[in-house]
Image (cartoon, rainbow, N blue to C red; front, side, top):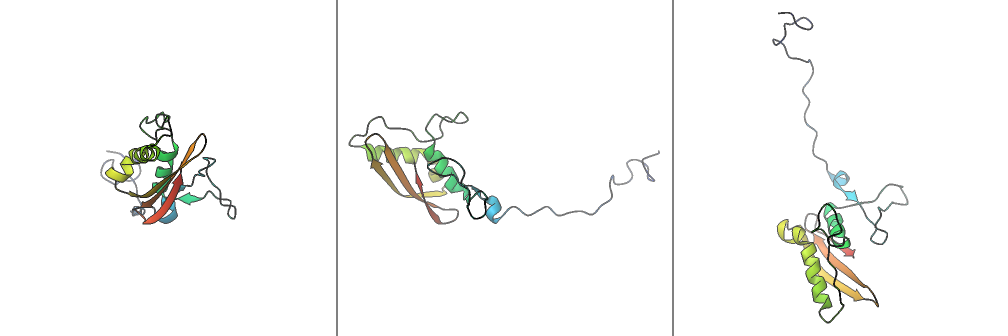
Length: 146
């Protein structure tokens, strides 16, 4: 049976070459995510290098979950933090419950986040929420404002 080249078809390897080892999984900064500015909700740029600044994936996930309004994400209506209609006597406790509900996946399921403190500051029309947490994958502490 005639084949392509000097060998009959099916009796010789299709290609000639050296086997190559698979590349190592990414490490260091290649596993990082883009940092998001908490005020502008845009990616931040390092002024000295001109490159996008990096953050850990866990910090980015926490920031996205706390800064996204519940039911506003079209991909997942359960993503985000709900709002409280009235700033009453139980406001701080209700905000704390909303934070824990928004971060349920990271706190209870994956166990990669540990909340250290939740601080709420009431304004005349709005309230600010500051959450301090520890990223258990790196052991670093972070703070996110929503």
